[in-house]
Length: 232
Image (tube, rainbow, N blue to C red; front, side, top):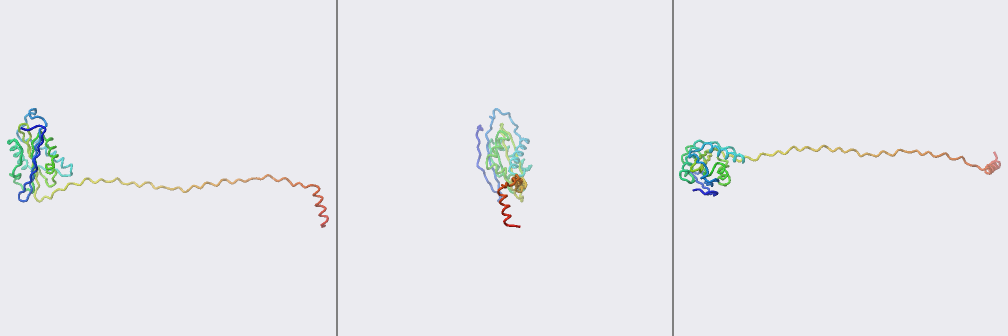
């Protein structure tokens, strides 16, 4: 029996096989709505919900600059099979080993498993858990297989991640470079030559004519007498 409003996240687990890392994580998500009030869901793998998981996880990867995971049909079949085993058992656990049944070549495998009410609830829980999130945004992983099985109104899901051998890990894309707008030089400052004030107009002062000299008669007589004394 599941309890509402309870989230139980198990510790991450690492298993190495032939020096090749295999990472698995478990998650149990409480159902938001009571099981008794939800309609009975089919007990088979739901292709549409599996596609919703892949789209949501690829959107998370795109947000950190990583390419989308492509679907591996063999991983899908194995994920559906493990989801069915968990649904039949009524609890979640990892496949042991995660690589069981896989016939293709691989360098690293990862697994996230969970049970919850629907796709958005489980995606949020996976992203909120550092260990599960690390699998989702691991740049080494390039392929994925998702299986979904309903049992007693609970969605059981298994996600298998794959790195191909010899494939160099993809590095997180750097954030887009921001191009600074071109700096427009300010228009040149034209300095006007200093303005010299025009000299004030020259003014010509016209003096009034002097009055004729006044010679007294007595002075004239003196001058005549002096002239007679001097002679010609």
